[in-house]
Every structure is written in structure tokens, then in C-alpha cells.
View 1 (cartoon, rainbow, N blue to C red):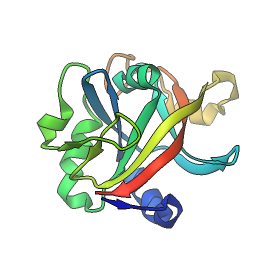
View 2: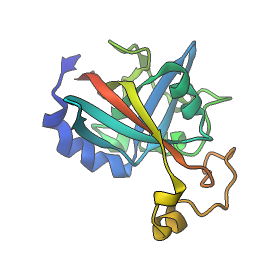
View 3: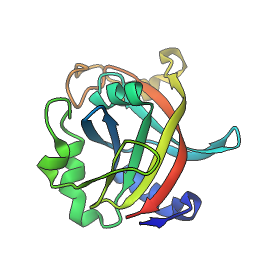
Length: 177
């Protein structure tokens, strides 16, 4: 395991994020991971954050609400994990084990219970210190129409009716396995 400075890897992280990276959680003995394409790395209150957006209807939302932590897993070789990232973005982990289904190896985190992933080695460990619900009235109409068209129910993994909780995850460790 090689400790890294996130700011040195920002170009790689920001290049991979819109293509899909994984957001992983653990609550009790239940692991979950989902694909995300939205997020930011920044500084607020003198702390470095990875900010993620999770729809209310997602199992990951329940996991983060209970544990108040997560990891962000960034591929260093997209070709080898492309199918896993696609799979994790199209199914709910509430009743299945995405890690096992995709042949992903769970590695214990250092400062959080949420996992690192051996096959997706760039790992950012985060503890939630702030969260905010999106406000429908503040979202421009063209974004509402394109990102929240209201045609797929909240219990579907491709849901678009519900809005997001924005989680500010203070970066507590970052490394490459």
C-alpha cells in the first residue's frame, strides 16, 4: 500500500470520474458499491473533501446514512474493470453482492470500515462531516428536465424521480493498493 496525496492525483481522478468510478460503503456486515459520475474534490473549512451525490432511493444512501463514511475507488486500468463498473451502476446491492458478482476483492480500509478494492487500487477514505439535501426550487429548469425527468420510480437502480443528498466526505486517507 502506497500512501498518496490526493492533489497529486487530481488530473487522473477528474479524468476517470465522468467515465464512472466506484463509491463503496459498509454498514454492519453488509458491503456495497455503486458507480458514480458526479463529485468534486475541494477544500472547505480548512479540510480536504471528496463530495459525492447519492439519490435518496439508493441502497448506498441507506448505507452512508447509517455509517457516515465511504470510500471512493478510482480505476488505474479501466479496461480490466469496465464490466464491473457498468454492473455496479445498473443494479442495487441491497439484495446481492456486487463484489462477488464482479470478482472484486474487498480490502479493509485503514481509517474507515468502508472497503478498498484490490482491482481498483486508487482509494480515498472519507468520513462524512456535512450533508445537504438538494433543493428542487434552486435547480434550473433545464437541469431538472435533463437530470430529473421523473419517469423511473425510486426503487429502480436507474431511478430519476428522487433527488440527491450531497455528502461532504473529509478525506482521512488516500493510497494505492
